Length: 207
Length: 292
Image (tube, rainbow over all chains, first blue to last red; front, top):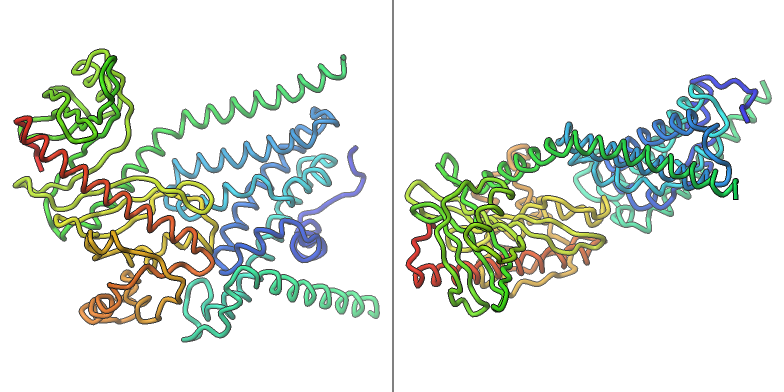
Protein backbone atom coordinates (compact mmCIF):
# COMPACT_ATOMS: atom_id res chain seq x y z
CA UNK A 1 0.00 0.00 0.00
CA UNK A 2 2.79 2.41 0.84
CA UNK A 3 3.51 4.97 -1.82
CA UNK A 4 7.04 5.09 -3.25
CA UNK A 5 6.92 8.85 -3.70
CA UNK A 6 8.59 11.01 -1.06
CA UNK A 7 6.55 13.85 0.30
CA UNK A 8 8.08 16.90 1.94
CA UNK A 9 6.40 19.47 4.12
CA UNK A 10 6.77 22.20 1.50
CA UNK A 11 5.41 20.01 -1.28
CA UNK A 12 2.35 19.06 0.83
CA UNK A 13 1.73 22.66 1.86
CA UNK A 14 1.88 23.78 -1.77
CA UNK A 15 -0.42 20.93 -2.71
CA UNK A 16 -3.04 21.84 -0.10
CA UNK A 17 -2.85 25.58 -0.58
CA UNK A 18 -2.82 25.70 -4.39
CA UNK A 19 -2.53 22.52 -6.46
CA UNK A 20 -5.31 20.57 -4.74
CA UNK A 21 -6.93 23.36 -2.78
CA UNK A 22 -9.99 21.75 -1.14
CA UNK A 23 -12.35 24.59 -2.08
CA UNK A 24 -11.07 26.01 -5.36
CA UNK A 25 -9.65 22.84 -6.95
CA UNK A 26 -11.25 19.78 -5.32
CA UNK A 27 -14.56 21.56 -4.62
CA UNK A 28 -15.05 19.55 -1.42
CA UNK A 29 -16.94 20.62 1.75
CA UNK A 30 -18.68 23.34 -0.21
CA UNK A 31 -21.66 23.60 2.18
CA UNK A 32 -19.66 25.22 5.00
CA UNK A 33 -17.67 27.18 2.44
CA UNK A 34 -20.89 28.74 1.18
CA UNK A 35 -22.76 29.06 4.46
CA UNK A 36 -20.09 30.29 6.84
CA UNK A 37 -17.97 32.67 4.86
CA UNK A 38 -19.83 35.93 5.31
CA UNK A 39 -16.93 37.10 7.48
CA UNK A 40 -13.17 36.47 7.59
CA UNK A 41 -13.37 35.57 11.27
CA UNK A 42 -15.91 32.78 10.66
CA UNK A 43 -13.68 31.42 7.93
CA UNK A 44 -10.61 31.49 10.17
CA UNK A 45 -12.28 29.76 13.13
CA UNK A 46 -13.86 27.06 10.99
CA UNK A 47 -10.52 26.59 9.22
CA UNK A 48 -8.71 26.26 12.54
CA UNK A 49 -11.11 23.55 13.75
CA UNK A 50 -10.77 21.64 10.46
CA UNK A 51 -6.97 21.95 10.58
CA UNK A 52 -6.79 20.28 14.00
CA UNK A 53 -9.20 17.44 13.17
CA UNK A 54 -7.62 16.86 9.75
CA UNK A 55 -4.10 16.56 11.19
CA UNK A 56 -5.16 14.36 14.14
CA UNK A 57 -7.30 12.06 11.96
CA UNK A 58 -4.62 11.78 9.27
CA UNK A 59 -1.99 10.75 11.83
CA UNK A 60 -4.34 8.26 13.55
CA UNK A 61 -5.38 6.59 10.29
CA UNK A 62 -1.78 6.44 9.15
CA UNK A 63 -0.77 4.69 12.38
CA UNK A 64 -3.69 2.24 12.19
CA UNK A 65 -3.67 1.81 8.41
CA UNK A 66 -2.48 -1.82 8.48
CA UNK A 67 -4.93 -2.73 11.26
CA UNK A 68 -8.14 -1.37 9.68
CA UNK A 69 -9.97 -3.98 7.59
CA UNK A 70 -10.42 -2.89 3.98
CA UNK A 71 -14.20 -3.45 3.99
CA UNK A 72 -14.96 -1.32 7.05
CA UNK A 73 -12.53 1.47 6.40
CA UNK A 74 -15.20 4.15 5.88
CA UNK A 75 -17.07 3.51 9.19
CA UNK A 76 -13.69 3.23 10.90
CA UNK A 77 -12.64 6.64 9.51
CA UNK A 78 -15.93 8.18 10.61
CA UNK A 79 -15.39 6.86 14.16
CA UNK A 80 -11.85 8.25 14.19
CA UNK A 81 -12.99 11.67 12.99
CA UNK A 82 -15.91 11.74 15.45
CA UNK A 83 -13.57 10.74 18.28
CA UNK A 84 -11.17 13.59 17.55
CA UNK A 85 -14.03 16.06 17.19
CA UNK A 86 -15.43 14.97 20.58
CA UNK A 87 -11.98 15.02 22.22
CA UNK A 88 -11.34 18.57 21.03
CA UNK A 89 -14.85 19.62 22.05
CA UNK A 90 -14.49 18.27 25.62
CA UNK A 91 -10.87 19.39 26.02
CA UNK A 92 -11.53 22.94 24.89
CA UNK A 93 -14.71 23.23 27.01
CA UNK A 94 -12.72 22.28 30.12
CA UNK A 95 -9.34 23.94 29.61
CA UNK A 96 -9.90 26.85 27.21
CA UNK A 97 -13.44 28.09 27.92
CA UNK A 98 -12.88 31.49 26.32
CA UNK A 99 -11.61 30.02 23.09
CA UNK A 100 -14.22 27.25 23.24
CA UNK A 101 -17.02 29.81 23.32
CA UNK A 102 -15.70 31.15 20.01
CA UNK A 103 -15.00 27.87 18.28
CA UNK A 104 -17.53 25.37 19.74
CA UNK A 105 -20.03 25.82 16.93
CA UNK A 106 -17.47 25.04 14.27
CA UNK A 107 -15.94 22.01 15.99
CA UNK A 108 -19.26 20.20 16.21
CA UNK A 109 -19.96 20.68 12.52
CA UNK A 110 -16.89 19.06 11.06
CA UNK A 111 -17.60 15.36 11.65
CA UNK A 112 -19.22 15.10 8.24
CA UNK A 113 -16.90 17.31 6.19
CA UNK A 114 -16.02 15.53 2.95
CA UNK A 115 -12.53 16.99 2.82
CA UNK A 116 -11.46 15.21 6.01
CA UNK A 117 -12.66 11.72 5.10
CA UNK A 118 -11.43 12.08 1.53
CA UNK A 119 -7.87 12.80 2.71
CA UNK A 120 -8.00 9.80 5.01
CA UNK A 121 -9.08 7.57 2.13
CA UNK A 122 -6.85 9.05 -0.55
CA UNK A 123 -3.70 9.80 1.42
CA UNK A 124 -3.38 8.86 5.10
CA UNK A 125 -4.49 5.23 4.59
CA UNK A 126 -1.69 4.74 2.04
CA UNK A 127 1.20 6.68 3.54
CA UNK A 128 3.43 6.70 6.62
CA UNK A 129 2.91 9.03 9.58
CA UNK A 130 5.09 11.98 8.62
CA UNK A 131 3.76 12.54 5.09
CA UNK A 132 0.22 12.10 6.47
CA UNK A 133 0.91 14.77 9.07
CA UNK A 134 2.22 17.11 6.33
CA UNK A 135 -0.79 16.35 4.17
CA UNK A 136 -3.15 17.15 7.08
CA UNK A 137 -1.36 20.46 7.60
CA UNK A 138 -1.42 21.30 3.90
CA UNK A 139 -5.08 20.45 3.40
CA UNK A 140 -6.16 22.09 6.67
CA UNK A 141 -4.30 25.30 5.84
CA UNK A 142 -5.54 25.17 2.26
CA UNK A 143 -9.13 24.91 3.50
CA UNK A 144 -8.56 27.76 5.96
CA UNK A 145 -6.99 29.89 3.21
CA UNK A 146 -9.95 29.23 0.91
CA UNK A 147 -12.53 30.09 3.57
CA UNK A 148 -10.70 33.26 4.59
CA UNK A 149 -10.32 34.43 1.00
CA UNK A 150 -14.05 33.99 0.34
CA UNK A 151 -14.74 35.58 3.75
CA UNK A 152 -12.58 38.66 2.90
CA UNK A 153 -14.37 39.13 -0.40
CA UNK A 154 -17.86 38.81 1.05
CA UNK A 155 -17.30 40.71 4.28
CA UNK A 156 -15.68 43.67 2.53
CA UNK A 157 -18.30 43.93 -0.19
CA UNK A 158 -21.26 43.00 2.00
CA UNK A 159 -20.56 44.82 5.25
CA UNK A 160 -17.68 47.19 4.46
CA UNK A 161 -15.64 45.60 7.25
CA UNK A 162 -12.74 43.15 7.58
CA UNK A 163 -12.49 40.92 10.67
CA UNK A 164 -15.22 43.12 12.16
CA UNK A 165 -13.21 46.33 11.76
CA UNK A 166 -14.91 49.09 9.84
CA UNK A 167 -13.12 49.79 6.53
CA UNK A 168 -15.91 51.65 4.76
CA UNK A 169 -18.54 53.75 6.56
CA UNK A 170 -21.29 52.08 4.51
CA UNK A 171 -22.30 48.64 3.21
CA UNK A 172 -21.28 48.61 -0.47
CA UNK A 173 -23.41 45.70 -1.62
CA UNK A 174 -25.38 43.91 1.12
CA UNK A 175 -26.19 41.02 -1.21
CA UNK A 176 -22.69 39.59 -0.56
CA UNK A 177 -23.52 39.06 3.12
CA UNK A 178 -26.49 36.85 2.29
CA UNK A 179 -26.12 33.06 2.06
CA UNK A 180 -26.76 32.65 -1.72
CA UNK A 181 -23.90 35.07 -2.42
CA UNK A 182 -21.51 32.36 -1.21
CA UNK A 183 -22.07 30.47 -4.48
CA UNK A 184 -21.24 33.53 -6.56
CA UNK A 185 -18.21 34.43 -4.45
CA UNK A 186 -16.76 30.92 -4.62
CA UNK A 187 -17.47 30.65 -8.34
CA UNK A 188 -15.73 33.95 -9.08
CA UNK A 189 -12.71 33.24 -6.90
CA UNK A 190 -12.47 29.69 -8.26
CA UNK A 191 -12.39 31.04 -11.83
CA UNK A 192 -9.74 33.61 -10.88
CA UNK A 193 -7.73 30.97 -9.03
CA UNK A 194 -7.68 28.59 -12.00
CA UNK A 195 -6.96 31.40 -14.47
CA UNK A 196 -3.99 32.60 -12.41
CA UNK A 197 -2.67 29.04 -12.07
CA UNK A 198 -2.88 28.48 -15.83
CA UNK A 199 -1.13 31.79 -16.51
CA UNK A 200 1.58 30.87 -14.03
CA UNK A 201 2.03 27.36 -15.50
CA UNK A 202 2.23 28.80 -19.05
CA UNK A 203 4.79 31.37 -17.91
CA UNK A 204 6.83 28.66 -16.20
CA UNK A 205 6.68 26.40 -19.27
CA UNK A 206 8.01 29.25 -21.45
CA UNK A 207 10.99 29.69 -19.14
CA UNK B 1 -17.87 -16.64 8.52
CA UNK B 2 -14.24 -16.20 9.51
CA UNK B 3 -14.07 -13.01 7.44
CA UNK B 4 -17.27 -11.75 9.02
CA UNK B 5 -15.89 -12.30 12.53
CA UNK B 6 -12.66 -10.61 11.58
CA UNK B 7 -14.53 -7.53 10.34
CA UNK B 8 -16.77 -7.45 13.41
CA UNK B 9 -13.79 -7.79 15.75
CA UNK B 10 -11.96 -5.04 13.89
CA UNK B 11 -14.84 -2.61 14.14
CA UNK B 12 -15.47 -3.55 17.76
CA UNK B 13 -11.84 -2.90 18.65
CA UNK B 14 -11.95 0.56 17.04
CA UNK B 15 -15.20 1.39 18.83
CA UNK B 16 -13.86 0.17 22.19
CA UNK B 17 -10.66 2.21 21.90
CA UNK B 18 -12.70 5.25 20.89
CA UNK B 19 -15.19 4.75 23.74
CA UNK B 20 -12.37 4.24 26.25
CA UNK B 21 -10.59 7.39 25.11
CA UNK B 22 -13.78 9.47 25.17
CA UNK B 23 -14.80 8.07 28.57
CA UNK B 24 -11.39 8.83 30.06
CA UNK B 25 -11.37 12.35 28.70
CA UNK B 26 -14.94 12.94 29.87
CA UNK B 27 -14.05 11.88 33.44
CA UNK B 28 -11.04 14.19 33.44
CA UNK B 29 -12.75 17.21 31.90
CA UNK B 30 -16.35 17.18 33.15
CA UNK B 31 -15.70 18.79 36.55
CA UNK B 32 -13.70 21.60 34.95
CA UNK B 33 -16.39 22.13 32.32
CA UNK B 34 -19.10 22.43 34.99
CA UNK B 35 -16.95 24.89 36.97
CA UNK B 36 -16.45 26.99 33.84
CA UNK B 37 -20.17 26.95 33.12
CA UNK B 38 -21.00 28.07 36.65
CA UNK B 39 -18.40 30.85 36.51
CA UNK B 40 -19.82 32.00 33.20
CA UNK B 41 -23.35 32.02 34.60
CA UNK B 42 -22.27 34.08 37.63
CA UNK B 43 -20.41 36.57 35.41
CA UNK B 44 -23.44 36.86 33.14
CA UNK B 45 -25.74 37.49 36.12
CA UNK B 46 -23.46 40.09 37.75
CA UNK B 47 -23.62 42.11 34.52
CA UNK B 48 -27.27 42.90 35.26
CA UNK B 49 -26.90 44.01 38.87
CA UNK B 50 -26.52 47.66 39.86
CA UNK B 51 -22.84 48.64 39.97
CA UNK B 52 -21.30 48.01 43.40
CA UNK B 53 -24.51 46.42 44.73
CA UNK B 54 -24.10 43.75 47.35
CA UNK B 55 -26.17 40.78 46.32
CA UNK B 56 -26.59 37.17 47.30
CA UNK B 57 -27.79 34.66 44.72
CA UNK B 58 -30.66 32.55 46.05
CA UNK B 59 -31.87 29.72 43.85
CA UNK B 60 -35.42 28.39 43.71
CA UNK B 61 -35.49 24.82 42.39
CA UNK B 62 -38.62 23.50 40.75
CA UNK B 63 -39.65 19.83 40.72
CA UNK B 64 -42.52 17.76 39.42
CA UNK B 65 -43.72 15.75 42.41
CA UNK B 66 -45.50 12.40 42.06
CA UNK B 67 -46.95 10.71 45.12
CA UNK B 68 -48.83 7.42 45.05
CA UNK B 69 -52.60 7.99 45.10
CA UNK B 70 -52.28 11.79 44.84
CA UNK B 71 -52.52 14.31 42.00
CA UNK B 72 -49.07 15.30 40.70
CA UNK B 73 -47.92 18.65 41.99
CA UNK B 74 -45.12 21.13 41.47
CA UNK B 75 -42.57 21.44 44.25
CA UNK B 76 -40.67 24.65 44.94
CA UNK B 77 -37.54 24.40 47.06
CA UNK B 78 -37.19 28.00 48.14
CA UNK B 79 -35.14 30.14 50.50
CA UNK B 80 -36.99 31.44 53.56
CA UNK B 81 -35.99 33.91 56.26
CA UNK B 82 -34.98 31.05 58.51
CA UNK B 83 -33.52 28.56 55.99
CA UNK B 84 -35.21 26.62 53.23
CA UNK B 85 -38.64 25.12 52.66
CA UNK B 86 -40.38 22.85 50.22
CA UNK B 87 -43.78 23.96 49.00
CA UNK B 88 -45.77 21.54 46.84
CA UNK B 89 -48.64 23.14 44.91
CA UNK B 90 -51.38 21.80 42.67
CA UNK B 91 -51.97 23.44 39.25
CA UNK B 92 -54.40 25.94 40.84
CA UNK B 93 -51.84 27.04 43.39
CA UNK B 94 -53.34 25.22 46.41
CA UNK B 95 -50.80 23.97 48.91
CA UNK B 96 -50.52 20.17 48.85
CA UNK B 97 -47.56 19.95 51.14
CA UNK B 98 -45.21 22.23 53.05
CA UNK B 99 -42.07 21.38 54.98
CA UNK B 100 -39.03 23.12 56.39
CA UNK B 101 -35.79 21.73 54.95
CA UNK B 102 -32.83 21.78 57.27
CA UNK B 103 -29.99 20.20 55.30
CA UNK B 104 -27.20 21.30 52.96
CA UNK B 105 -28.61 21.98 49.47
CA UNK B 106 -25.58 23.00 47.44
CA UNK B 107 -25.39 20.10 45.01
CA UNK B 108 -28.11 18.19 43.18
CA UNK B 109 -27.23 15.04 45.17
CA UNK B 110 -27.63 16.91 48.48
CA UNK B 111 -30.95 18.33 47.37
CA UNK B 112 -32.23 14.92 46.30
CA UNK B 113 -31.25 13.45 49.66
CA UNK B 114 -32.92 16.28 51.58
CA UNK B 115 -36.12 16.02 49.53
CA UNK B 116 -36.27 12.25 49.92
CA UNK B 117 -36.13 12.82 53.69
CA UNK B 118 -38.90 15.44 53.61
CA UNK B 119 -41.17 13.61 51.15
CA UNK B 120 -40.52 9.90 51.68
CA UNK B 121 -41.95 7.71 48.93
CA UNK B 122 -42.56 10.57 46.50
CA UNK B 123 -40.89 10.73 43.09
CA UNK B 124 -39.35 14.09 42.28
CA UNK B 125 -38.28 15.12 38.79
CA UNK B 126 -36.10 18.21 38.58
CA UNK B 127 -37.53 20.82 36.19
CA UNK B 128 -35.49 24.03 36.41
CA UNK B 129 -33.93 26.64 38.66
CA UNK B 130 -34.68 30.31 39.05
CA UNK B 131 -31.99 32.46 40.63
CA UNK B 132 -32.90 35.57 42.58
CA UNK B 133 -30.34 38.26 43.36
CA UNK B 134 -31.29 39.55 46.81
CA UNK B 135 -29.97 42.69 48.46
CA UNK B 136 -28.86 42.70 52.14
CA UNK B 137 -32.42 43.69 53.16
CA UNK B 138 -33.94 40.78 51.21
CA UNK B 139 -35.14 43.05 48.42
CA UNK B 140 -35.13 41.42 45.00
CA UNK B 141 -32.60 43.22 42.80
CA UNK B 142 -33.01 40.92 39.82
CA UNK B 143 -34.38 37.52 38.84
CA UNK B 144 -32.59 35.20 36.45
CA UNK B 145 -34.49 32.64 34.46
CA UNK B 146 -32.46 30.01 32.77
CA UNK B 147 -34.27 27.87 30.24
CA UNK B 148 -34.17 26.54 26.75
CA UNK B 149 -36.12 27.05 23.60
CA UNK B 150 -35.92 25.44 20.18
CA UNK B 151 -33.71 27.21 17.70
CA UNK B 152 -33.49 26.64 13.95
CA UNK B 153 -31.38 23.51 14.46
CA UNK B 154 -31.28 22.37 18.09
CA UNK B 155 -31.87 23.84 21.54
CA UNK B 156 -30.93 27.39 22.47
CA UNK B 157 -30.17 27.90 26.16
CA UNK B 158 -31.16 31.36 27.36
CA UNK B 159 -30.73 33.41 30.51
CA UNK B 160 -33.38 36.10 30.90
CA UNK B 161 -32.72 38.79 33.50
CA UNK B 162 -35.76 40.54 34.96
CA UNK B 163 -35.71 43.60 37.23
CA UNK B 164 -37.66 44.03 40.49
CA UNK B 165 -40.64 45.30 38.43
CA UNK B 166 -40.34 42.23 36.12
CA UNK B 167 -39.18 44.39 33.21
CA UNK B 168 -36.43 42.84 31.07
CA UNK B 169 -32.92 43.82 32.19
CA UNK B 170 -31.22 41.76 29.53
CA UNK B 171 -30.88 38.51 27.65
CA UNK B 172 -27.88 36.19 27.45
CA UNK B 173 -27.53 33.28 25.06
CA UNK B 174 -25.68 30.64 27.07
CA UNK B 175 -25.52 27.80 24.53
CA UNK B 176 -26.70 27.17 21.01
CA UNK B 177 -25.78 25.33 17.84
CA UNK B 178 -27.15 27.73 15.26
CA UNK B 179 -25.22 28.36 12.03
CA UNK B 180 -22.35 30.83 12.27
CA UNK B 181 -23.06 34.03 10.39
CA UNK B 182 -26.80 33.29 10.36
CA UNK B 183 -28.71 31.99 13.41
CA UNK B 184 -25.58 32.33 15.56
CA UNK B 185 -26.09 36.10 15.38
CA UNK B 186 -28.63 35.68 18.23
CA UNK B 187 -25.56 36.02 20.46
CA UNK B 188 -24.85 39.50 19.19
CA UNK B 189 -25.70 42.60 21.20
CA UNK B 190 -27.68 44.15 18.36
CA UNK B 191 -30.18 41.29 18.66
CA UNK B 192 -30.12 40.53 22.40
CA UNK B 193 -30.38 44.15 23.53
CA UNK B 194 -33.59 44.66 21.57
CA UNK B 195 -35.31 42.94 24.52
CA UNK B 196 -33.80 45.21 27.16
CA UNK B 197 -36.18 47.61 28.85
CA UNK B 198 -39.39 45.88 27.72
CA UNK B 199 -42.07 45.69 30.37
CA UNK B 200 -43.95 42.46 30.95
CA UNK B 201 -46.99 43.86 29.11
CA UNK B 202 -44.87 44.93 26.14
CA UNK B 203 -43.21 41.53 26.14
CA UNK B 204 -46.56 39.74 25.96
CA UNK B 205 -47.43 41.64 22.76
CA UNK B 206 -43.95 41.47 21.25
CA UNK B 207 -43.61 40.19 17.69
CA UNK B 208 -40.83 39.83 15.13
CA UNK B 209 -40.57 41.91 11.96
CA UNK B 210 -38.52 41.22 8.86
CA UNK B 211 -37.32 44.80 8.46
CA UNK B 212 -33.71 45.97 8.27
CA UNK B 213 -32.37 47.27 11.57
CA UNK B 214 -31.90 51.07 11.28
CA UNK B 215 -28.21 52.03 11.58
CA UNK B 216 -28.70 54.39 14.55
CA UNK B 217 -30.76 51.76 16.40
CA UNK B 218 -28.06 49.15 15.81
CA UNK B 219 -25.39 51.57 17.07
CA UNK B 220 -27.26 52.19 20.31
CA UNK B 221 -27.88 48.46 20.81
CA UNK B 222 -24.14 47.70 20.58
CA UNK B 223 -23.48 49.11 24.04
CA UNK B 224 -20.05 47.57 24.52
CA UNK B 225 -18.81 49.62 21.55
CA UNK B 226 -20.12 53.03 22.66
CA UNK B 227 -16.80 54.07 24.22
CA UNK B 228 -14.73 52.83 21.26
CA UNK B 229 -17.00 54.76 18.87
CA UNK B 230 -16.96 57.89 21.05
CA UNK B 231 -20.73 57.86 21.54
CA UNK B 232 -22.54 59.72 24.30
CA UNK B 233 -24.36 57.27 26.60
CA UNK B 234 -27.30 59.59 27.35
CA UNK B 235 -27.86 60.27 23.66
CA UNK B 236 -27.68 56.58 22.81
CA UNK B 237 -30.22 55.76 25.54
CA UNK B 238 -32.54 58.28 23.89
CA UNK B 239 -32.08 56.61 20.50
CA UNK B 240 -32.82 53.20 22.01
CA UNK B 241 -35.90 54.60 23.79
CA UNK B 242 -37.15 55.96 20.43
CA UNK B 243 -37.09 52.48 18.91
CA UNK B 244 -37.92 50.62 22.15
CA UNK B 245 -41.61 50.20 21.31
CA UNK B 246 -40.94 48.42 18.02
CA UNK B 247 -41.11 44.69 17.48
CA UNK B 248 -37.91 42.67 17.36
CA UNK B 249 -36.02 43.11 14.09
CA UNK B 250 -35.26 39.63 12.78
CA UNK B 251 -31.67 38.75 11.94
CA UNK B 252 -31.11 38.74 8.18
CA UNK B 253 -31.22 35.15 6.95
CA UNK B 254 -32.26 33.83 10.37
CA UNK B 255 -35.91 34.79 10.86
CA UNK B 256 -36.76 31.40 12.38
CA UNK B 257 -34.00 31.64 15.00
CA UNK B 258 -35.08 35.21 15.83
CA UNK B 259 -38.71 34.14 16.20
CA UNK B 260 -37.90 31.13 18.36
CA UNK B 261 -35.70 33.13 20.72
CA UNK B 262 -38.36 35.85 21.00
CA UNK B 263 -41.03 33.26 21.78
CA UNK B 264 -38.66 31.61 24.28
CA UNK B 265 -38.05 34.87 26.14
CA UNK B 266 -41.79 35.61 26.26
CA UNK B 267 -42.59 32.11 27.51
CA UNK B 268 -39.84 31.98 30.13
CA UNK B 269 -40.55 35.45 31.55
CA UNK B 270 -44.34 34.96 31.54
CA UNK B 271 -44.14 31.57 33.25
CA UNK B 272 -41.70 32.88 35.87
CA UNK B 273 -43.91 35.80 36.85
CA UNK B 274 -47.03 33.63 37.03
CA UNK B 275 -45.27 31.00 39.13
CA UNK B 276 -43.69 33.51 41.48
CA UNK B 277 -47.06 35.18 42.09
CA UNK B 278 -48.52 31.75 42.84
CA UNK B 279 -45.65 30.76 45.14
CA UNK B 280 -45.73 34.06 47.05
CA UNK B 281 -49.49 33.77 47.66
CA UNK B 282 -49.26 30.08 48.58
CA UNK B 283 -46.30 30.66 50.92
CA UNK B 284 -48.28 33.33 52.79
CA UNK B 285 -51.22 30.91 53.10
CA UNK B 286 -48.91 28.17 54.34
CA UNK B 287 -47.36 30.46 56.94
CA UNK B 288 -43.95 30.59 55.29
CA UNK B 289 -41.84 33.69 55.00
CA UNK B 290 -39.90 33.55 51.69
CA UNK B 291 -36.53 35.33 51.70
CA UNK B 292 -37.52 37.45 48.66
